[in-house]
Image (cartoon, rainbow, N blue to C red; front, side, top):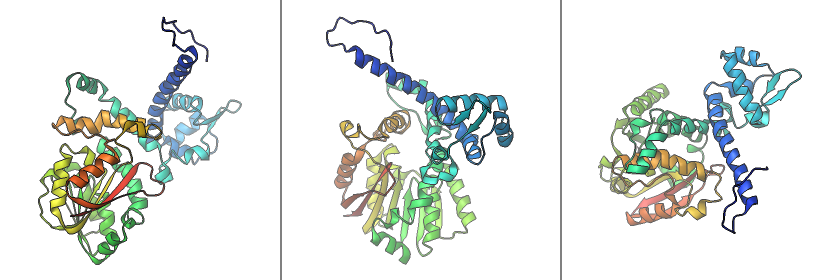
Length: 364
């Protein structure tokens, strides 16, 4: 790329490095805009529909999706110039390659990456308010993110449906054996309860409880449990910090929720108190280091630091919390668990899951 660069007096100014960075900036801008269009393509099911179509005109695609042709055509322009969708000018037909649809459609399951694009517009909605937080401190409460839980539920359901009972709960054979025999289980920050309901279905001899501060989430969890015909699960609206069922549970789980807590230290203390002697704590959290230099080569680090700034850290600070943030990292997590009395701490990986670490520990 050739651009004019203002000459600076500093002798160490490298014009070639400046031009290289300018090219990267243009790519960042294009990628950011494309992420919005990918989100639209996902929400409107354009990707899902095109994955099943032969090469088609914009009018044919609009008719198939029951969408406005003019908007579809402009969206296709972004997809073609972004090299996501192929275009044949001689026939004016568009085609979504199978190699691309494998990461863009709902049927892709765990490989579906388009679902994450929805976070871009969600974070953009609060950008101006986050700017004010930079100036004045504080944070934004959950109420500023009305669709966050819905998107997160869709995202995590992919993982739970494909990996929870067959891989995650098998990371420690003793946990799965106990579940089969019948134990008391609590899921902290259960959201819409999908994990609890899947476990309840898989392990009918065990009893499962889920708590979350969202009434909407708990209502949805109960509806799914009823749909599954489950009698061994229960849900309640409760702040995780108020867990005080001393020594009741054989297993407590927390799926991607501890770093979101306003007071994670107190929540972990409550979890420890609520476990039976030698009970297990299974914590899923972001696969990251507490040290920024160790995250440089992580393919997801920029996105995760952004989500932390725009949501996870901010929500915690809104409630005068610790503000751990998404990227609190393995080192801090292990240190905090150890200080709070958890023992035999192991950090596990699940094959194909680059997003999460799985911490397994016992009550001391």
